[in-house]
Structures are given as structure tokens and as C-alpha cells.
Length: 237
Image (cartoon, rainbow, N blue to C red; front, side, top):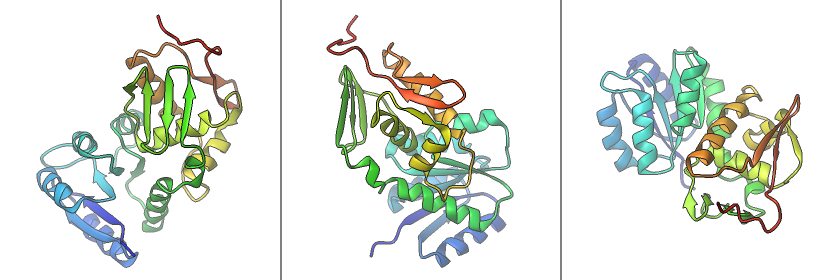
């Protein structure tokens, strides 16, 4: 059985060593470093499945490092920070982070979040349908690509899973709690409203890709719904 590889990037030696030991005990293959420069070198050599990334590093920021790693491959990223500001979480998610954990945190919670992130890759619900097509929009679960007019819309892991979930039942009004259990799973410890942040990012990326049709609409006091364009309407200008 191949062990999951996790890279820990944390400048606080006490936290780094504690997390490293805990993950080793959970039978993960673990490497850990204290700064961004070493992290990038080891990231390319180690090819981790998930990176636990501190935001405040001595030579860079976790935001910058997350962006660089995501440009290299589509690795899972769990960010650690002492910052509790909502804007920092939005920024982290926008740069490709899959989850966010605020210090101080418990090791049991850390383990639960890691398991939840890694399970997303294996979610059977995402593999029942290989491709969904709505006008000029194509969602491919095999390549995990979203294209609008043959142009790739760069979504993170969680953004793709969320969009595919909504698109699998066009016209259905999803409650936030349903999205929470479907996309994250019941073991994840968090707020169902976290979907709001990700949906805001998806909408922004759609607009930046030239898509004017509002595929994801808000259902007041309920959640969200995936809308389809009029039949045979190509959305061409």
C-alpha cells in the first residue's frame, strides 16, 4: 500500500515537530521544513499529496508559496495561521487552498481535516458522471477540467467538486447543509456557509473567462441552484 505523502511548512519548531510526529504516527510519509526556499526545493523532489502550509514564514508568505505550488501541480493545501480575519481566508481559498486551520488547533481536528481533504479525490459521486455539458460550458470529471468556449477555467480541487455537485442536478435548490455533507463530507469540522466563499470565487473566475451567464444562482434563505442556458442557445455574442 502506497503511503500518503505530506509536506509540513512551519517556521515554529515546536509546532512543526509536534505535527511531524503526529502524522508519522498516523502512517503518513512526512517531510517538514521551516521556510519557503527549502519548501519549494523539497516540494519538487518529494511530490507530496498534501501540503500543510503556515502563512507567516521568515522568507515569504504562505499565500505566495501556495500560489507557486499550485502553478506547479494541483496539490492539496491546508493552511495554518494565527490570523482569524475573514479576508485572509478568502485570499487563501482564492489562491488554491483546500482548507484553513487557525492556531491554536488540536491534533485530532488536524487529522480529521486531512482525512476529509484526501477523501475528496476519491469521492464516488464525482465519478458517476464523466462529463457534463451546458451550452459552452463543459465539466469533465476525468480530467477535472472546466472549460468555457474551449478555454480552461482554473478551479481548485474544492471549487471543482462544489461546481460538479451543483451541476449534477440542474435546477435543484441545494441547501447549504446538503452541499456541506456532499462536498466536504460529514467528518469535516467547519461551517456549512464556507461554500459561500468558494462559490464567490467560482463566479469571479467564470466572469474573468468571459462567461456572462449566471450558472450558479442564490436561492434566498436556502442555498444555491445550478441554472442551465436556454436549450440550443450557444451564448455566443
